[in-house]
Image 1 (cartoon, rainbow, N blue to C red):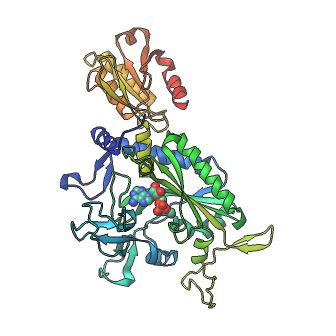
Image 2: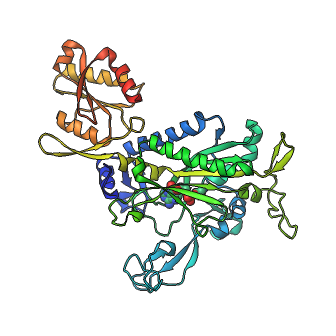
Image 3: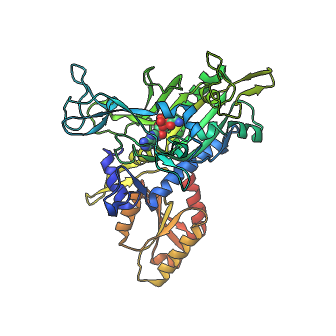
Length: 463
Ligand code: GAP
């Protein structure tokens, strides 16, 4: 089972502290969301899992953390200043502002307003999605010399560091550079909770290869990411690949495959249930060429007179110099978090006929790994033992102590936030130095000696 719709996750998130509406006490801010105590743990676990898999478990990837605000020339030569836009239309009837490429058409091919159903829309005009800002204390708001952008992708910060990383790490092709960080887009139609927001986080790999190895490296990463996405708890039944058409490809891409997740299971049309979780593009040698000082256009003019470097690669084995091709797997943290929560969402009926929510997160993803609960909070010895156990577990795993309700309520709360194990200290624990460990998914309980508890939990969490 997985969540029946995003709304279910929105209300669970608010109820339990995964995600809150940003600036809520002032009425919120369109499509901005904050991670609460559990959300930040889950997001960190996702980022940790990705970084471990990409940077530590492979031998061919280095990490970087580049600036959010870069020299404006980065966005000029990347093509973002001229092409990073959406086709904007206004509905003349209801005044809604919409992305034309996301609208349905009627039998005559006219675009239909998704808000009121009218086809009375303006012609499309390009709307650049980059957030603008100005640099320097004395700059006027419209001073072009002070104009800068918040990065709309983390990728460019990698390309402009290609030579730095190559020179300092002494890597040979193929190798990659990975980065996790915030990106900003002034989306025309954000929405669907954290699915499309104006501020979000990306986890991007730019993998540099010889041109003739690009196609096979591309497939390697498509297959690899299916495996990684499964490993964090997302099942194949809710995933699908989508090959972008020639018309859909970004200006730099030769081939892009999106991995889609079933974010909208409530939709009748199965095709429409899926939307993009991530994209894996073959960006060719476009990026390293456009940021290099040497390449020339057909008339012999430098395509980039502002760059001070040549980002080509010299292959000492073949004595050839060329611009590497780039394979780019790019995945959003927010969409991954939403997919992980949707896939883990389960309902179970207890013996009293009450429906309980269980978030069946993989242990690696769970914000809290173990909750230590005293059966009687009015008995100081039990409370003291439970608090001590929590402290003992804490260096090995995220553990919490909770005595704010009856045991049934405490179990239900931990099930709902995905805590794999509850450890209950009862009257007998004081006699036999053992506790009851309850499994979130099976609700089965096992008596475990306190001396063995940490080892027992660490072992179970690793499986
Ligand atoms: N560097 C390539 C790039 O940025 P993209 O397909 O535009 O490609 C990559 O973005 C991923 O970033 C998407 O698959 C999605 O997971 C995430 N993403 C993009 N825009 C987003 C938004 N407005 N809100 C949340 N996540 C977004």
